[in-house]
Image (cartoon, rainbow, N blue to C red; front, side):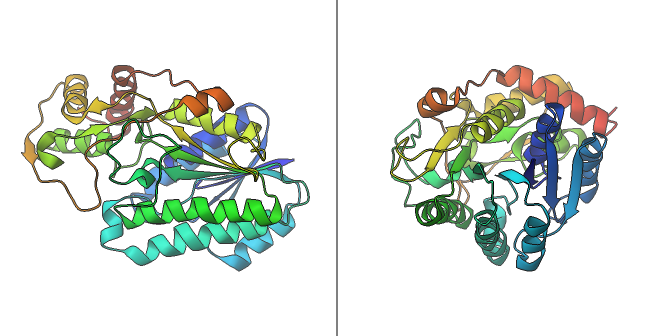
Length: 328
């Protein structure tokens, strides 16, 4: 038996691989290792995973039908899929919309088509996003709220993934769970995310762009807490009747505590021992001023409980950042 993890060279993906390998799973990692951000960081993550026995890396694009069909046909022992690969980033979707359709929509369908033919598939777990809540002003965001008014193309693709996957669950009985991640951060994080962007700017003496004139709040969630939620979800296949009449469910994975962005920056300044130069900007198209997760369903059905405070999480991130970049 094996678990397939897409986005295995990614931030969350490589941690999920490590977690599964540590408990003795055979893991097949898929990643095209594209240049959306520093390839060397992705390769360094892969090296961490490849140090463990039981891991196989397949370098391929999830939207490549032939490559995915060949992979799934060669590995009928796959019993679980954790689909984390995607074109990420709200703002980048404004400049390159086509890659979001190719990766996030075509990739989702290609994987579902391949997965539904597996003889012993137990569960298909996939990454959604808190961005599906769009400009919803009722906080915290609950899975019971309507999510049909996205404010970015990225959000629209993630909501479409949820609808497409539910359809596959309905037609083919594929047990599937979508996880709406809330602003994940931590060591080995993405360079286009807030913690990394801010730390990099501070150490290089560049100003930080802070949007909505600083009036921003985010439900920052530490990567270890997210990974625990992903693996627990994998172990608890969606069942018809849990949330729906088909074996499909969605959950929020967040810290359930919204942090003021300026306080977040203050923690980074403290742990770096340097002050930031801040450049305030208006709210950007596709962005939202605040996010906050209602995780009652995740607690009830998955036993999900975030445990890492923002000060501990950012301290861990900065320690890694300073070591990885040899900051003096």
